[in-house]
Image (cartoon, rainbow, N blue to C red; front, top):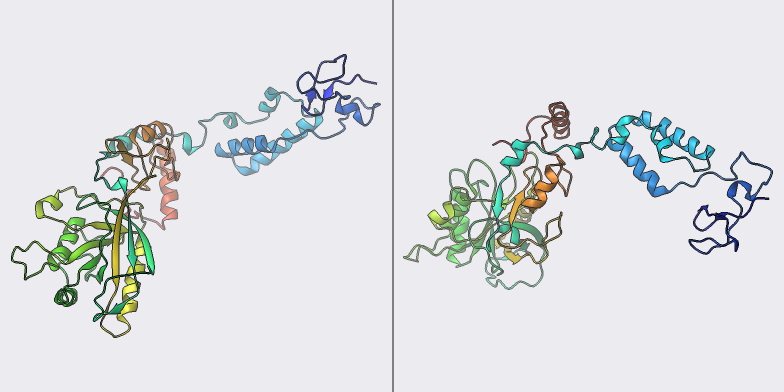
Length: 404
């Protein structure tokens, strides 16, 4: 009979001890598993080798990341399992490695996450130094309420019927105050190209007669800058009785992220021409997602379908982000920090965090959206895959034209 030299707790051999106790955990030693149930057998293991499920999952993931065809993985796994069972799980790592194809052991082989972003794209990324007025430091919401008759001029609202997340533009006023509730106006044309229609101006005129402030809804597109859209609404709401010409009943503008085949979100509106300061924009401007913009329009249409002269109360809230942090380092963004916004998905990171990742991987650290690489062969396949996923052609999203 074999001397007890196997620790069932540690599941490993332990040198023979006079007291029969494991030197690692103190468990009582037992005969090795191959003799535990059948002392006459010296060649067949009494049980199959123990497989760590986490280790097996990591191995499968590593092989999958190499891009090896799945049909070639199964025979390898079966061979590994057979070899492990025949040696009672005591096969050395070098023996197991010899069964794998060379690319399975190469971390650079066949996986996009190990391809760095092309230098041209890295140079193209816009760096922004945050200030106390940067949109990245603020959150915005748009609240809509049930329609009410025009003769009900009370703007006190108690229950929000629809609340939508928004992103403030990097121009106009940004503060921590909630704009008072006002009437929602769906502008026509939505992009304000050619100016606001007569119907929209008449609607604003009625509100002006009642001294009622309004929030205008417009949409992105048609080559009209965000500031120009907001200025059209601000000017339409100016009080003709105010001789200074500075006061406007327009107290906010909502921009729907429409007019593009594939939405990039979050999207931060910018004023690259400095039009806000030049032409005196003083109303806040926020953007909502494309689907949320359609909800706003549908809400207004429901109100108009009643045939009664009504208005829809709307409110814009802008608040500081107290817990908005970089997904890589988990540190909060603060004024003075330099950030990078990725063009493919709009996610924001500290510049140093983004560069540390993108010089090794061609994916967004947060959502894994891919960016271009220097690998021409891989780029052909990547662009073909993106075209297939988007239905073909250039989708026109803000992040697909990397080079301007």
